[in-house]
Length: 418
Image 1 (tube, rainbow, N blue to C red):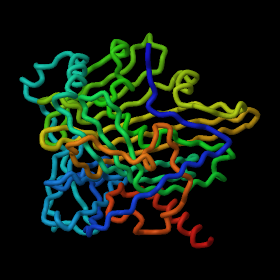
Image 2: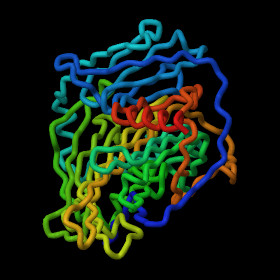
Image 3: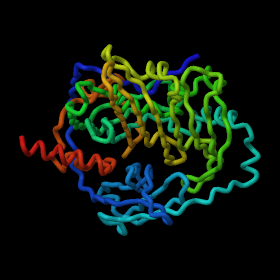
Image 4: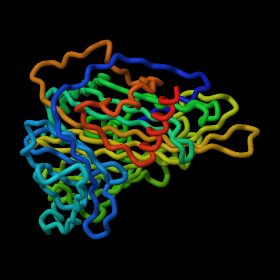
């Protein structure tokens, strides 16, 4: 039996520092559009909504407040923004119609499937196997250079204790290749308040690689190995839509007699092509001892650390008939018990990465040794950049949540005092 973990956490009392060279930011002129996307009827914010500039590979995603920011090159000012989200009708808007405080309303999609589509696939496990076998035909099989924005936060209960952000370049290998992707650091900033961590430093090992490995199609071995597939139960759920396409929803969970922690969740599969469009899943953490071994690399002897929640999300996007990784989000919650102490601590580690632009490269992608990250990388403990509102230049980023915005403002105040 083989179950591999997506993320490793380092729990250390000794702090580790990682530094990298920063690449100069882009100098292109760009128009910035900010706004909020909500449900047409309820007016509630819509998270994980995709925004793509037509005719380009430039994109972003809305945050947990439904807010987004999109920097549009001068050459694309007359294009259209395509707004899409799982379960909603796709909306197309002229860039000229949007301003710095636009409110976009999406209409829920009708989720009926025609009888022919329903009758074609009656075995959910066979459908999942067919989907995993499509990597050579449906997904991008060219060398691709992707620009991505990565954010990582660590909270003690509700207070931000660490905030990291980075722009990276992903050297994405063809989906039909066994070669693993590489990541280069372009620009980054980080601030950590260790006074909120009770002398215990939780550090996320892997950084952007952790999110990249949620790409189930490229890396099925992290969740659906040939050995593990028979250990799952699969079933159909109510169908939905994405980008006006009908979508199968397949539930999966480990069988009752399986002790080893496996995953449970939903796979969203295009009914026409059988491409995986989205996946939302969690690790079964009921067995504290076994699930702890999957995440904890090192810890003090007098401390017990175990996960209480481990949730993952990955979204794919199609361009020119080919699918590729577009966004992922990881949320991990840990309980820390100090032996001899009455109260425990709760820590939440969240990371997300969004592809904001990409291009196909005909030749082998050259990498810079100085800026190449490793899967064991821990981002640097540096607060540089938080005091500069123009730090990211023309790079597209994920709009910060309200709580993160507040944390950044506090960091800015601290920097002004010093």
